[in-house]
Image 1 (tube, chains in turn orange, red):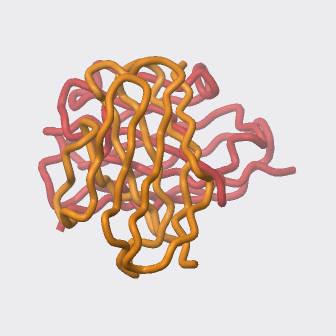
Image 2: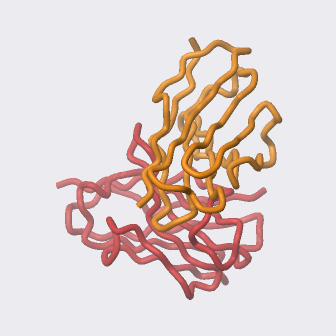
Amino acid sequence: EIVLTQSPGTLSLSPGERATLSCRASQSVSSSYLAWYQQKPGQAPRLLISGASSRATGFPDRFSGSGSGTDFTLTISRLEPEDFAVYYCQQYGSSPLTFGGGTKVEIK
Amino acid sequence: EVQLVESGGGVVRPGGSLRLSCAASGFTFDDYAMSWVRQVPGKGLEWVSGITWNGVSTGYADSVKGRFTISRDNAKNSLYLQMNSLRAEDTAFYHCARIPASYYYFYYMDVWGKGTTVTVSS
């Protein structure tokens, strides 16, 4: 099973700042089959990134994903108030599907 | 509007059973594989099970294999999760989610329902 470790656990930033979230896999994720989700309190997760870098419909270009192999990054170039949420990574390159433990981006 | 609405959650004793349902609308249900993902409140996400568009192929997490059964009824645009021999550690919020592929239940999920709560307690 591929274990995904997200860091930091909590990121305290101010609106306008840059957020860099890390997702590290215990083994190489084949074909960059890595997704990112955003979850706000009381809401379902929402697909943000698939294939490590393809942004989902509805998300602005301040969100970007990068990486390959075992190291992946989600970057939010300038935080907007609506971006404060929990972000999860997920790999779908090998069985079983696994998720990271999440990074909470909170307002400083 | 694309929508997934789960139902069937509740409180059940250890060893008991529950059947979750997920009603899909706003898209052609049988064009998509589907999955169930659970979340302990305040904790992370855990993939539970997935099923291809025609129900021929299914997959399960080791933690539920042999106890849970996923199924679908394309005529009713519905996904199900039969949960037997429930344990305290199955207590979670259960989300139904759409997979943007037909033949792979092993993929990412592009639409999620809000979920239904399952509590296993004596």
